Image (tube, protein in one colour):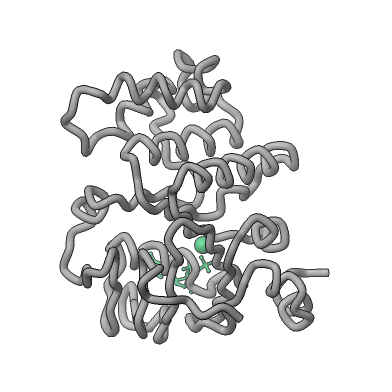
Length: 242
Ligand SMILES: Nc1ncnc2c1ncn2[C@@H]1O[C@H](COP(=O)(O)OP(=O)(O)O)[C@@H](O)[C@H]1O
Ligand SMILES: [Mg+2]
């Protein structure tokens, strides 16, 4: 098992506990996200996977432990500042502006930017995601679920993130769109963006991941390479379905 060298890690969770109210949801979660790689969090419903991403982004209360991003503890750093420092987030489910056009949605994605290259960057993104160019004048609500997921990824990319936190991108999509979305995740990573992904479609997700982390009941059960987890019998039995 490769050790996750802190020097290589863009994001580190160190015994993180987090809660929405009283009940602890993350119960001492520790792991590192290797820079430039794809790491996928798997585990049953309610395990706390989405909460891990929210803790990284700073939208859930961390009560113990520490999160280190680019070698700096980020406790007390606002969500907006985390985004400015290169964290992009695609939440689970739809997060676009349905009554705005595809192009307007991409402009909304650039809300934190004040430079003048936004329109140029939108053109670049439309080249990269041709289906969005084709639909740029359509309301987002008129796109299929998979097309909306791709739009949301493009909205995140317009901030030129260092790390993309992406929650269940394949949820509810047709098999063809699942392949398309995973291919884009790979492509985005190929451009140098570190990816921390949450996926129910664990088998398919691990197959494109460098590393995987199994989360269960708010605790890390296992972390290893994606390949090793795919070949691990216990993981297969307990977390991958048959
Ligand atoms: N906004 C919230 N308020 C209160 N409890 C929540 C909230 N979001 C999630 N939870 C609870 O936290 C636990 C973990 O949820 P979540 O991180 O969404 O799990 P997963 O993404 O692994 O399915 C669940 O028990 C869920 O009910
Ligand atoms: Mg979730």
